[in-house]
Image 1: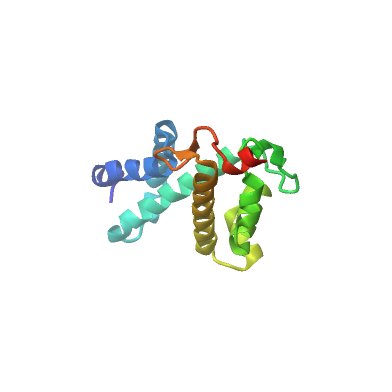
Image 2 (image 1 turned 90 degrees about the horizontal axis):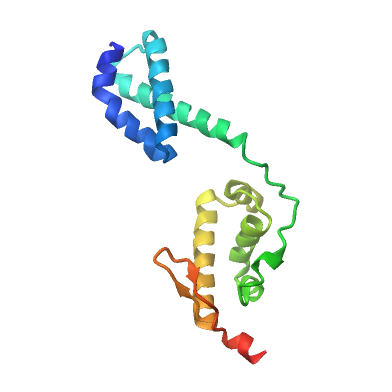
Amino acid sequence: METQKIWDNFNDELYFFILKKVKNKDAANDIFQNTFLKIHKNLSKLEKEEKAKAWIFQIARNETINYFNKESIYVEKLNINKKIPLEKYQYICCFDKFINDLPKIYRQVIELIYIKGLKQKDVAKELGISLENVKVRIRRAKDILKKKFNECCKYEFDKNGKLIGESNCSICKTE
């Protein structure tokens, strides 16, 4: 198989595969170029032509991972021992109360991820549950919190489900 044949058969599909992963045209172009460079250099290692597509996309996946690894060098490391001051959230009425009122399984996940800053996969290991279970608990906790904010504080939600507007809290008005 020749590089030109691979280009003719897979270039559009490969480019959009990369673009979907990185969501940045410049980065996708760089990764795409690096991918084809590696394909060209290593074409002699492709043993079976029918496995070309899988081989090409594996190279693209590896190049995408390399891109994200290089990008992470420039991201400030999160100090997980650093407590995030809750004052940051004090402007949101009843925030502490609603977090504390969550069922324990949801409160744990929310506190570990959003208060302590742990990654979801680390929370899964710490709690001895699957990553999928962590994600489900986050979603359910957020649904409970949204409902409580809507019922008590009369916040509104935008089309993305984020809180908007000013609080019209029944609890704050009585205190």
